[in-house]
Amino acid sequence: MKLYIYLAISLLCFQAAFGQKSNNVTFEKIAEKCKDLPSEQRLTMKVTRFSITSPKVPSGEFGKELRTILSNAVQKTGCFTVMETDDNIADFGIQGGDNIDAQLVVTGEVTEFIEKKVKIGPLTRNNVRIGFILKVLNSQTGAILFSESVNGEATQNGISGPAVFGQAIFAGTSLSGALAQAVEDGVIKAVGFIS
Image (tube, rainbow, N blue to C red; front, top):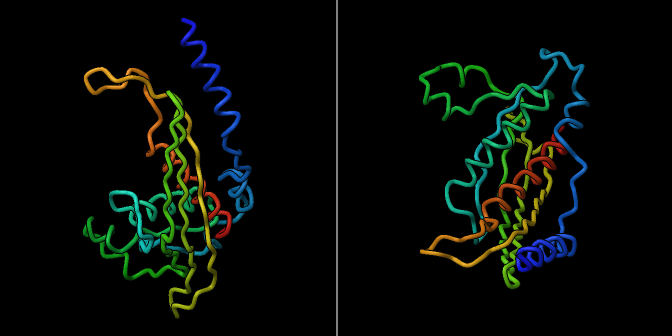
């Protein structure tokens, strides 16, 4: 019992020492700027796949996943009419994607991915930082209308305990949780820049 109390107190101290600052920008605050904008006055936008130039990248198709998350976030603000990408429309056999061009194209390049895991006894701290260049293009001319470097960072703390038959007794934090938080942080900043 004393061990569990010690671990709980240690975790609280660990979080206080390495805690993450809260992000004051929210989708709700961004959407507030566009709440009275009629849909016919919204610019049309497509978010395309992000290229990856960082030497280290998360597994999977991170560029496509970032595109999907950013498209969803921009659409939720109500500031733009977000159009589906042509490759996704082709999956449904719809012919409308090429006939209706978006006014703006959002694209980018993932330039940084850093992951660090610190373990002090049973306490763990996962830190993930992503960086990407966000570009807004004129879809007719290809001119870059706006370009911004965006960073997302997150730290996740937890307890890792002994394992029994390969399974941890205490569920520790995972790097994927910190990655998800870092992506969310970066996407909120990106949407704030776009809007």
